[in-house]
Length: 308
Image (cartoon, rainbow, N blue to C red; front, side, top):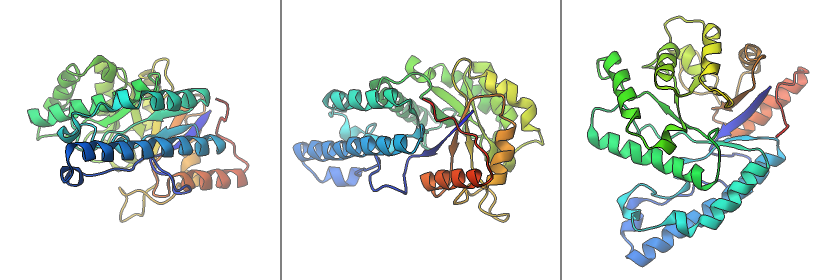
């Protein structure tokens, strides 16, 4: 069966756990006021997270991508003296209990600036710090390894083979709690589904198939022929995939507001033998998910499993 989820922001509710502040704003404050500001933002994000989790559960949405901004400026030196993990230990425990008790799967997608195969030592250092922050959040929530961190391979740097090798070697530099959660997604311009799958098999991590990215960038492979291998990379964990519809024929790479129901049914029909979680990457977020459900219901099609 299939479970659908969305990324980061609900357009149907007011409260989202992505409140943030900027380095410029906190640098204007004295140390005491700076900590107060960071705490206020963090408190708001926990309040909004609990509100959003309840909304998701009420609407049978058991897959959700947590915004990277959840802990404000978590990896920036301006917040280095702030022990947010200790201060908010009770809040992490409360949220984690709710997530586990309701069978919700949280995932994350560190930003495009985190590039594990970068040639620059400074970028690699900041990438490891960013991945470690995301893993720490999931560890503090007490979530199992189904709560994954999605990344892309990164840049080609005029030598694709060397760039893949560099990803593999830099992967070994990651802390163990990051290695357990990291998964790799095919992108829409640089690394194809097959190339990412071979990398994942090589280093022993799961692969996230993004079907829209595959439609944008491939060497003509039929993705269904690779599906058993993709599923196998997940082992005992539930495979996770991404789907979006193109905005238009002229702007094919961009994401549409909603999911095309026929395109969705074509995709999931090939997944009939598997349990798969699918993040819908649409401009309309949760509203797109609920709209797709209504469209499928009109067609008399039930693809989702609502059991926890």
